[in-house]
Length: 243
Image (tube, rainbow, N blue to C red; front, side, top):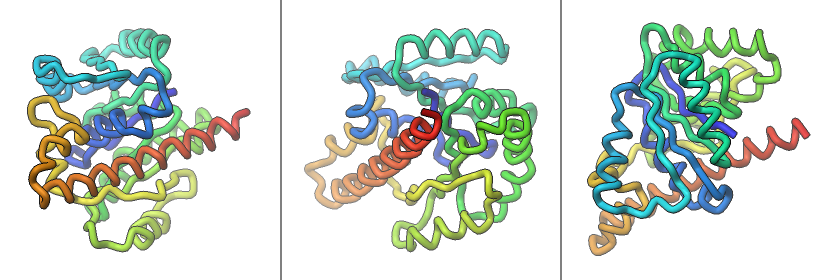
């Protein structure tokens, strides 16, 4: 199975979501082996993983892979090899405003594509101009992939009504793009957790002596677990439908 976090715009939370769903308790309990795969040539997660390795952090059933190539055949071979050794692959795809090579590749090969997006007219326009045409082309060529694409509302106000935010996206989405039943709220902890190669669970554990920060961290963990469970639910539905 392959899950991709895809958005042509940068700064929508793709990498944070990829890392922390990979290390979520929900994924840890479901899969024996998980591969976190970065396709961004800049290697932001690669640097984070290197810090993680230097700090001797325990990654349990998670492995990391950085694919910097822009050659389709090379990426396909690497993905195929990684897939033979893991139950699930979580792909972090770079924001791309021009060729969108990695975006197209990820959308084509993934079982589930998660599209993080803010409730912003700029984000809506960017989606319509850049990502939607790719989705349309893939569905025209492979109608079975019509159930592969899901929005995830991101950086929502933590006090916002979740159902209203989700309904907003459902109203503006074409009928062949779904929306997860969860949101990704804005929390400052998401900008700070990854110091010294930590994931969110590890960072929150490191601040447990600070009651105020710890409470916010516990809420962030709950956010990620809800997102991870929602993704697993969509995977289960897809597996059931194809059985």
